[in-house]
Image (cartoon, rainbow, N blue to C red; front, side, top):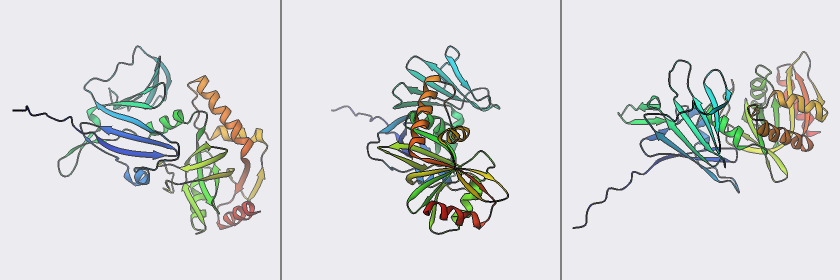
Length: 308
């Protein structure tokens, strides 16, 4: 009699696509769910780009997390997450101030193509049907941290609204309160204009072009669209009494760009890669200062400017 063979449990899998990055997220113990489904909904399906390779993310359930006290801490947000290094590996630990132990610890290999996330039981949820499921930790802030690292030298995450006019992409960038969501809502009222996001946009070099991508991290307007367009201009926005648009020199463009870009300040080598990309970007894409008074007139001014 042939002995029975108990098959290995099949991993539960979801796929998260942001810009040209495609995360294959698996867990052998639990079905994985995305708790913030509204903004992530469009990004939770395959959207493979030409030449893109899926990134393997394993969710591992462990009673004891990896020890980090012997490693070098390279960054501390002072609120929830910190980064540690050891030869060939980076660790990211997420621990809310109200807790004594991390919710999860992510381990990233040197090639940035394999990510193991050690999950605590605090991520386990129970559905109305009584099923135990695992809340996907690849969400804010981890997905943004991973994105910043994985795009080094070829892309950036920018605090900006992404707006498409006649199939051309434009960034409307600014710090909190500058008016990104206001601009997005005003433009959204015009049916000839498409909005990718009202708060964070990925820009990435693809061949000879710079493209912009929507992200699942919306602002006050709640806009998060999984689409892209070739980038044709960057507008740095400010509230003002009167509307005006002025072209900036590359130097002034760089100063403004650095204020609204997520940079790896914790690593000198990685930071230089990001700065080199900024330099390449501003050789291709023009930058402008946009002063605006909220109202439909600014939309007409933008349309007139980009069509001229």
